[in-house]
Image 1 (cartoon, helix red, strand yellow):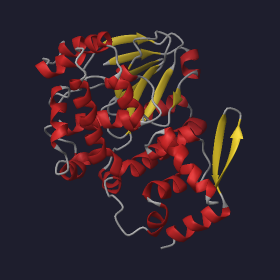
Image 2 (cartoon, helix red, strand yellow):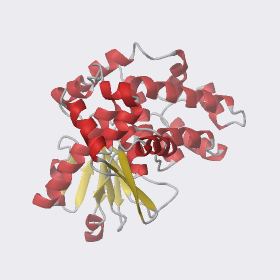
Image 3 (cartoon, helix red, strand yellow):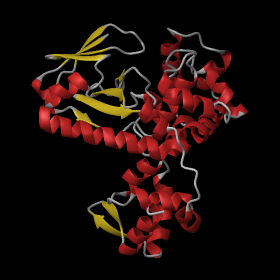
Length: 332
């Protein structure tokens, strides 16, 4: 159990993020697939996914042991804006950083010859790893991403309202009661690693990250490269079977809007409805910012969205024509 010691400054600096993003969720999905006995919320997902995994994903068994946490790729690649950026950064991780992470992992799990080779100069194992993660993402995460992102955003909104109405300490008490307990001024957190430690946040604060594939247990992580960075606590948002069944139901009916615009552009038009920037839109859709810029240009040139500059950023909004298309599609 971790015991996080809070000061008044830590409480003031605690915030809720918009989610871990598609790269981190894909890494955690790999861990869920390696569980011998999955929890009920993931059984339908696993049953479908296991029949769609290709040969390339087999190498992931080297870095994700059975019933255990795998190598912390999130710590290696840092903050991301898209899944593709995570793959690019993974290819460019310095061998010394990979070696340090593998050494830490080896304390609990015996490294295979292939996993050791990730820290070598030969780029082929890295490429195999990237190809395996990309294949896993395509089969296990991308088909459900719209549902996953909507669930995470809904949880974040509900938690934010809870803070406004009842306070941050009440949020701590209700976040994940089976594994997270608030005993002022200490937050007790049970994690899969089973660590026992006292952590004094010292004014750094805590980042709360809603996640689907973290499983039933929260996951606590620290930025070892930056001692001043806040701790990060990923907590589960998939806690009941009814919600899970809705999440793993991929929309398959005929979609006239997708036939007209293409699936990616129809999803972008839908996700942009409340107005958002390029980076946020990339996170919502699960593609790179460069891809978003290309698709929004097409939508803008056809009068479906408008774009205005806000400082260094841009904000996309749906035009009346775009809204009419969305309304007609949803009225089917």
